[in-house]
Length: 252
Length: 86
Picture (cartoon, each protein chain N blue to C red):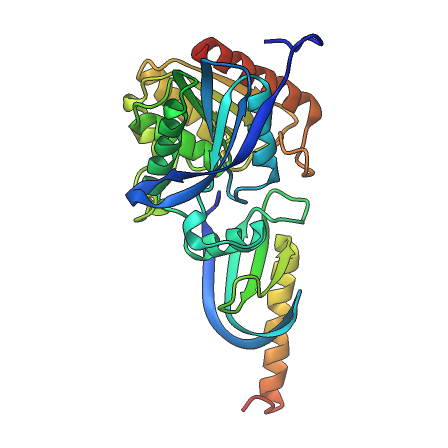
């Protein structure tokens, strides 16, 4: 809802431990409003560069909007160091397994629901590899009420891109999606390309899924990232407005 | 990773990182999102030891990466021609 100057604000943000796949403890950045609940929740799935500042700040942004927000460290198991060092370790390991990510994200949703102030409705959002993970999770989980895929690369994957860690092309799971989807894409992106977004949209239509796609001219990959040259102010502001409206509609 | 294009090879060499010189054991070559270079993707090379944080990172555009490969190949060719490689 629109911000009012007479609004009482307060939030708490901290690192917490979530029990991820196989009972592994993983860190998560957890931010929630101090106002008494019930509140909707959102799980943020970080992008390939890792559990970085942009994601911590996006988590805070959701909390200021009245959501209990949590962003799990999907790279926890490779160890700790600077964001870049961890990203390189993950890159060297060939990425993180899809099944592990889905389990860790579901565990984060359960953490929010168990917090005592939840309205029981949890959304999931991710960008870049996290956008793909968000869609993948949404197609396989019953924990979520809405999903936002922001320029997820690899939702439409070639057979030669599949391996033990990424065994399924997420678009093939489209028949299993049973929650509304928001998609935000830049028309100058190369992963996903506009053609791949077309293929994804065709699958959604074929299976009668509820979705809305917003595709922006003059924007490429990662155009919300204000810390990178890819940032496009006008498109990013409009894209954020779509994110807020979507989650308010489906999680309130 | 968004492209998932990663190659790696064991190497013997030394590199100078943030904490001085170290023995490099692996070269991780990827074509994926760079950290610093202002482009969506780059040819990234990370020279690594077994110690987390001991790393030399390079991010190149594709043209530069190809030029580097050609320069390395040419230098090695001349070294072989001069019988400098034992």
